[in-house]
Length: 253
Ligand SMILES: NC(=O)c1ccc[n+]([C@@H]2O[C@H](COP(=O)([O-])OP(=O)(O)OC[C@H]3O[C@@H](n4cnc5c(N)ncnc54)[C@H](OP(=O)(O)O)[C@@H]3O)[C@@H](O)[C@H]2O)c1
Image (cartoon, rainbow, N blue to C red; front, side, top):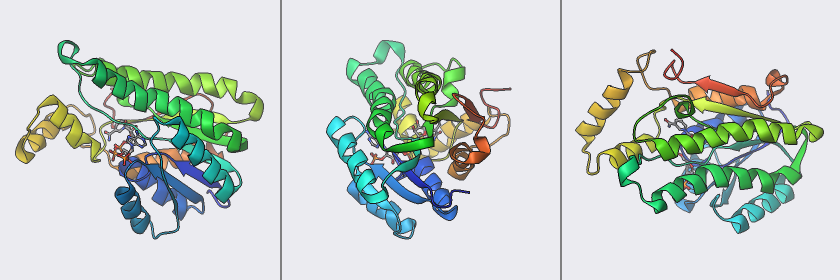
């Protein structure tokens, strides 16, 4: 589906980004993945069979983003697909949230996504596809998640605005909206809500969430990767500024 295409996946060293990198490679793309941690990138590259470009880059650093875009241009010439996926998640109840916590969520999830696109867009080919990673949280009112949900609502909004803005270059921007997906990020969310949470408490915490998901289970990263592949490919050529929800019905039913 992606033969001869080039793709950049931010936050490709773990979870959804890593599963997407694997699927893109299986579909014939040349793939670059980013993350902050060199060891995780190396581990991801090994898991992907080594045929992947790894780039250490923090989406909060404009220097890193410029270097990332320059390397992609040098190695790939141009880019057909950007999956702006890097993100963090933690709980911030209104009365307990520090400015630092609020800024961290906005800096990585919103500002990081915006400036990733700004840095990479000049390298993108006409007719390219950009996929953003929002979340089911942009559709519901989940207590304790004000800053996180607002950050993902902003990402959802960027898909519309930037799709309109990049229309002259025929670059499509859409968003994938995962529900609760079994990746390392969930443990951090649990710890932020219940510091010191044990493994058994975490299991019960997740079960509590699963009980509320209509399909009756967490999603897995491959199920999101499949949706991203669709948005990245020509199969979604008539989609602009949209949101593809993959959440087991959590925010829908
Ligand atoms: N799992 C879910 O339930 C769920 C639901 C809805 C939306 N999402 C979204 O899906 C995306 C991927 O999350 P995931 O579940 O796959 O979690 P994950 O396994 O923790 O992966 C997060 C990825 O983002 C990278 N990252 C984090 N901060 C970064 C930064 N400042 N600069 C560059 N890379 C950074 C991480 O690498 P380093 O730490 O090495 O930088 C890692 O590769 C996130 O945007 C998340 O909000 C997840």
